[in-house]
Image 1 (cartoon, rainbow, N blue to C red):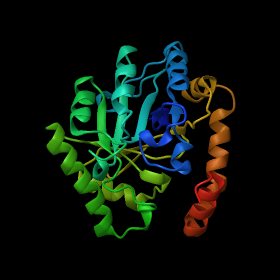
Image 2: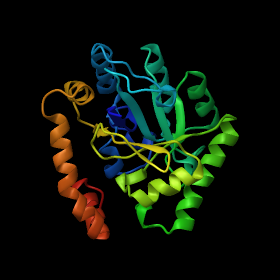
Image 3: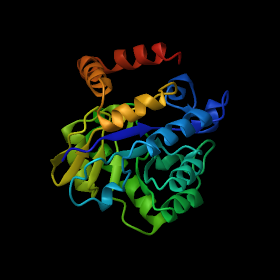
Image 4: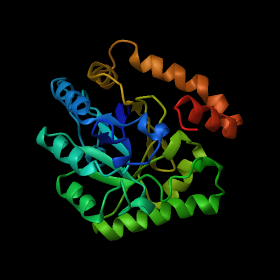
Length: 259
């Protein structure tokens, strides 16, 4: 199956990045202002694409793109309303340990997202800095605790998840599948999906705090060179992430201004 997905995070008031989601400059790199996000949605709405619910898809759908939102920041209810007003479905991946804490969603927010027709899924329980470095038991606990909490809150099965930090491996996917999820979103910039132990693995194209609406449409539609540029950058970083994890994380924090 070939199906592009866009990866957003939080939407914020200018100058107040810590009001939604994880605090600090590194997290703020992924947070978009209200005005810029509205421009993204307007451009995407005019793109003649469909923005469906991945759990409702039975066959690949041409001219479709999935919209995903990681972390579970307090801006999720606003995002959900904005999407619904335009007939778009969002996929909200929640760090369940943070539910009800400053900057993050409340239980009622998740129920509201569900009522609007959005998908609520897991972003792990505690958002480890490198989830792929955990042993099997710790990995299983992350995904199971998160799924159990969400299902208790929502009253329905939770079958979608996303990998925190971009640290995807096939071992992570196998444990996600073992826990009962049927869809796992990674941060790998690809529109090609594959299956691991019955779980659909889907890549995503990232949007940052300064990404233009034109860039979002180009990634969603596969026009220009935006997809190829993200793929190249990702694959150049992959060996550094895999073999020098602590060094990579320190360099990344320094580059993003998070000392």
